[in-house]
Image (cartoon, rainbow, N blue to C red; front, side, top):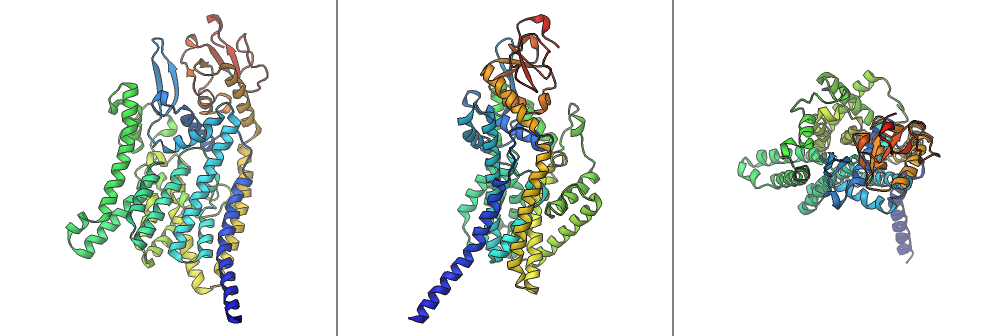
Length: 519
């Protein structure tokens, strides 16, 4: 009887000790929500530019416009609507965001706040699904927790975790797909992998960069082990490849067909198709901004090594840009450690696919990834492998270190959250919230379906970047003041009839006379 009670107590103690890392992980990740900035606008740089762009695309989604993704629209004199399309991504994330923000369509601050929390939720889900995958591979909860928290503590992960675009949801989709691969390799459950691949592709194309090395490695393995090419043709790896790329082609075809029908142009003439070709370096475009010109390959490769290095360092250790050359060398050494980990790995197909996924995305899309540093988050496989390699090695030397590594990683992650939000607060100044308040008054005045002309730079008025298109979604942004009912300017005395006297950054005027159309 006494032995039975002792055994029962031991079981309860073991149960609680197993739950403790999970509870600690949930508490640590919850702090991302607790310490976020009260930013209801769009700061400068890629973070603000893409956030305002994501809000614009989601706000403009409607059945009225056939679920076409576009930046803005204007009304021609003959009554036809012209769209400035941005239709190259899967519509999945933007539809989900639309569902969340639609009930607050008259409250910009609430919409932006909800959208940021949706992004952080995807980031937290990505972290947790990565933890489950590493837990399956290492069979050690504390070690898995340390690996994931350290991997997600980098500048790129923490700074862009609330950027309102499809990158963070796709980041989740990629790690969900990897989780499906782990289960398939361990338990031979193929349908769940197909479902996770489909779900991941619903958010973004980067998932294909993980699938490609997985299916190539798998088919080579089948071929070398069997010696028969017929076995490769019948393998599930080929089926996975066909399913993945056909589903991706289906999603993209729907976008291109929708745009082609709406704009009444063949698909090879629509803007989305040509911009995609340029991103892959297949065509040149002389109309692009200087900042979008081709990047020299040497500079591109150096930048990728730098980004790998920064992805493998918690933000609190290198809070700003750091020594560029030193981090390049560090990134190269991290990659070598990952290759060494692949050599000694039991599940080489999984580790190899995770390692190559970042390269399989960055290299073919170098005209895109080269100028967008936030794409570095898709190198997440490298820090996951790197920290796994270090902690497994440390665990063999000092077993007690594993538990303490989880505590240390938690502290690093928490300090990173606090410091990154202090870093963000510099860019997220009060002017962003003031601009949102100004546009809120403007939107309340004009409603929907009105014709507006912006006198300043479309992409920078009031510091809002793409924001103006979001704030004025549902209205027509005209190319000429002669076709506009209202005028927007950053100067308070630009036109006679001011409608928003209480504004401080952006001002709305009624356009009643052709004599004062221009400032």
